Image (cartoon, rainbow, N blue to C red; front, side, top):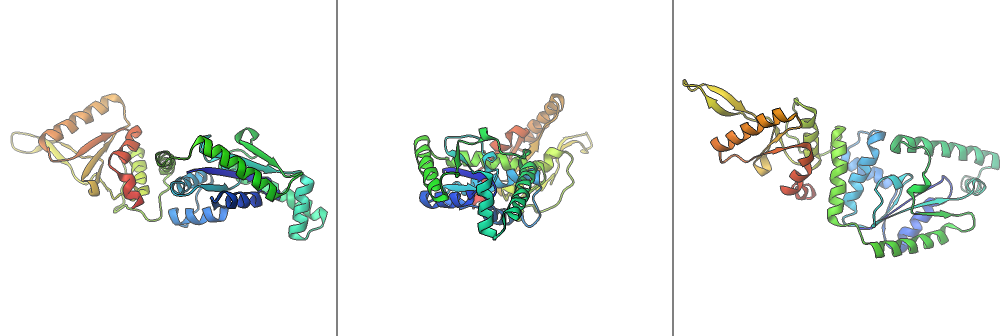
Length: 314
């Protein structure tokens, strides 16, 4: 689908421009309030840390973008997605005198009070931008289009923006389902590293993990609503002459829905070789056991190869 992001200076009427453009384009409008609601449904009532907010927002928006063209009216939204043919990033601005005048009209303030309120709004915008995107001020180079409302109104700006968006997105193409999947996976992996998981977890048991990568992988499975068990059983591999087990192997995870054991490895090569030997021996002794060894870079392959994405959307 197509994405149009819009942000702007406080009291510049940029929200009105976004609303008008969404109506003209027949795109779904995403506001701060609506996104907060969707994120609450996805992640529960626990506040998302500011540094993880961007990843959490993209995880939600990428899923919505599979079915809807979006106008994302969020300050700082130009930082959510990398530049792409299916994306147009716009900014709305105007002179301070006009912004103060808008506050005078909207809040019935005298000029000194309006100017003081404008300073407060600017400071708050910088604080939020700094917390979410590590940059207090907007970067002009991050936008494809800037609209100045000094000599035009919000309705006219919305018409110009809608026309520009329709032309660019029609010529360049739309966000494909595969691209949306890639974006959502990358952001969910980043959130998993921070221990942020959906409100409705598929986890069936708690676990004390032996390595950070294992906890990250469990969080990722939680994102996709995949049930998992951590080190559920050990497989004997060698026995002495009296029949006592001398060597065994315990895979990291078992995914009951797929009857699949998963062994993760991010360690040095000598230890990887040792693990691979055990897995090879396990397959020889227990040919009915389905087991795969994965590096961190293979997490995405696991999701797509075994159709976990489809389970998540069901």
